[in-house]
Length: 258
Image (cartoon, rainbow, N blue to C red; front, side):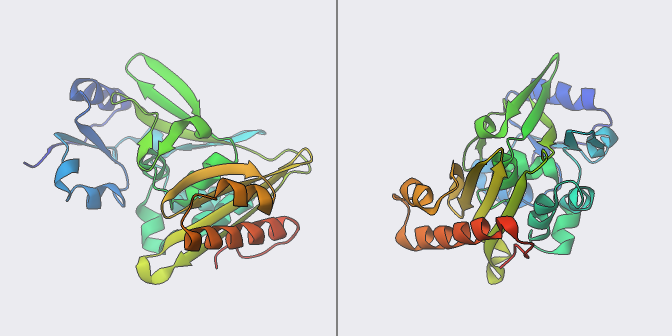
C-alpha cells in the first residue's frame, strides 16, 4: 500500500502530522537513505511527511561557541559553512558519495537514519554535538552519545522531529583529524572511519564502520584494539589502520579521504 503523502508548509503542521501518526509516519528530508528503504516491505510507512517546504529548517546559525545546522541543510551547504570553523568536519563531509548526493542529502536525514558509515554521524559523536528534537508542546536537546542507540536506532520518539544539530566550536589549542577508507565501487560508502580529537591535553578517538556505530575511546591504538576485540578480524584491522592514520594526522594537514 502506498503511503499517504503530505508536504506541509509550516513546522507546526509537521508536528501535528507526527502527533497523529502514532509511529507510522516517516519523515522525508533529502531522501538519499529513506527512499531506498521504502522499497522494503517491512519499512512501508502509513504516512510520508515531506519537509522540503519548511524553510526555517534550512537555517545555519553560528555564534562564537557553536554552529547550529537546520535539519534540511544539505551536506554540501554544511560543508561550505564549516570550512573555516570546523575544517575537519567539512573535510569529512567532502568524502560523502558524489557531489549530486551531497547536494540532496540533508543533515537531519543523515543523523535521524543513523547509518554507521555516515561521516556526519561520526563527527557528531566525536565532538559531543547536541541534537534538538521538537514535538507538539515540547523541545529537548540530546547529546549525540545518547542519541545514537545502534544501526538505524536513535532516541527520537515517534512524535518528534529532529530540528537541528548543534556542533561546538573548538577551544583554543584544540585539534581535530579525520580519516576514512572508502570503497568507491560500492557506491562510495565508507568502510572505516576515525575522528581524533585533542582537547585540554586529552586525546580521544571515535571509530565507526560498515557495521559499527560510532565508538569513542581514549586516543591510543591499544585502547582501540581493546574496544574492537570482538569485531571481525579484517574489519578490526582496517579500523585500526584508519585510527592510526587519524592520530598521526593530528599535527598535520592531510586529505582525510583514502
